[in-house]
Length: 169
Image (cartoon, rainbow, N blue to C red; front, side, top):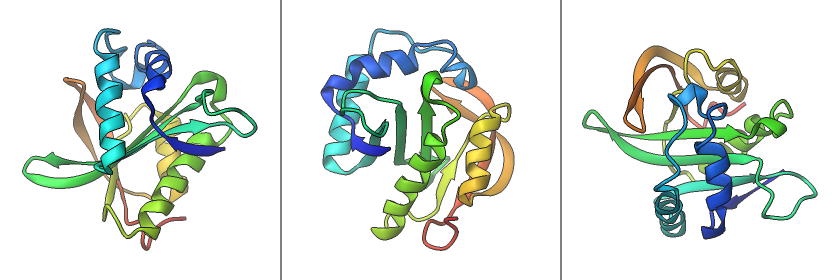
């Protein structure tokens, strides 16, 4: 498995992931199809400038167009405090192969090696067993159960944090 930056041609992969009820069940449901091109364009811009790391997960032995999922690391304001956050999703046909764990580990390793992002937070839904398992297995520490907003929707999440420089398993 390898990671590559998001590209303008990834609109189809975004639609398959973000507009699919099963893929988005833990994130409040599917996003509307309209606006996906603009989201990809913003993500490509952020990746190109280094403002965020937005990577596509590419399975071993496949070309760059076959996308198994995404993993991203970005900074944002959380109630007046800037934080770095990581998020990921893996398409159903690729789940259960350890791709999410490997992708998260790879991106956090890059953050450690470049001494960038500082503490990294993750907020998987409390009901998302696989993503919470990724957090535990990579070395995140559980902070608390909280409410998180994603795409304008509020839901219960587990708040995890890791210092890639010292905690990466």
